[in-house]
Length: 487
Image (tube, rainbow, N blue to C red; front, side):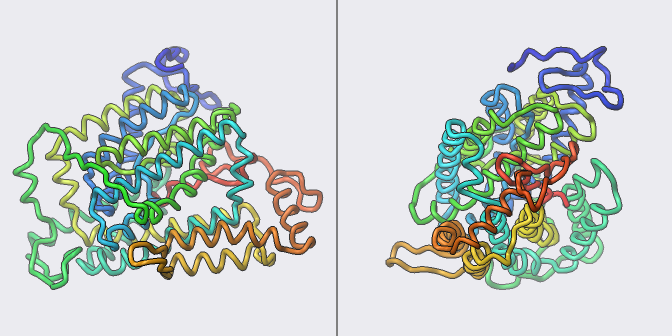
């Protein structure tokens, strides 16, 4: 099924207990309305992460729409999903730029990761979903996600927050309050609401108290400047094509970004299982297609200078709230995103987002990315009393967070996220191979719990069909929920 949607009933919103299937649709006015909700849900994160990575937000928005259409075509409409900008690459991109790389180097490294992800998708499609858990068990996946998030702490603390500490503090507080005080859809777009709040607060402070003296991102000395610089907005056209960036390739830079692939595999595995639970369909046979499609989306986006893509849990939240899983709504959202990407004036407004606002947002986002690694451990009952889990992962995490560097030559080194990931993944498998029998047995019991076969630990219990972090019984992982963007 690609475009042949059946009309659901009379085309009206489904009653309680009913749902609109992926191959069905509501009336076109209602479908367009649902599609607009999907645009709002994905919007905040899809443009904030390109800004953080130093990429064109307009191009990222446009390519996210194109990548979403490609994804839906590859999975044959069986997995409704929106492909927005991935947070998993932010740390690797920061390392590339710290190593002297420009935007061409950044998108080149991301493109290589997209190719690797696509190849992994083909392997999963041939070997089956169980291969994910064998190579990347939850203990390892959680460690990699945790070190990716916490490695970014200096970026938030040293680059964005100092640009306007009080706006950063106010924005952070607003996001925290909104995410807890509001319910449903509104809480899921708390990052977008926080960006709007911080932007408007900065404009108000510029008008009331005048310019601020601080060190702008990338500068070395403090300057006097307005919080919001709108000079580029007036000069921007209403309609035009975003600026493209040709990728350039480096083995060293590619290795810095490559660990993000592990996070994307886990994200897609959890996403497919969650959607399968919500739609009451077995989607395990298309997991490989979904991972492959995400890889293709990342390759397409980065080949012209766009951002890496991933499936978005914010949009799972929209589906859970509306009970509309129609892929027609995602096509609408994708088309809207493409149109927005062709409005340079809109992009200029986005690019004028003050550094202080990003500071308030990133302290929440980066911390949540890291804590989601701990969430994976908790929900999969990873036993850190077992040295197989404890010792190699402890080393990998400290290497990743502390940016430990291993210099091989004048032109090649490994450090931070890339080295920490290698230590965590390889170290865990080596530790498992060398461990005595009792430690291996304990690991098997832990794995049996996740799959509901352990005689001592028992089953995990029923899934919550509306929970986007539903446990993947095949892979033993959960969705790395894009609550990394919307707390």
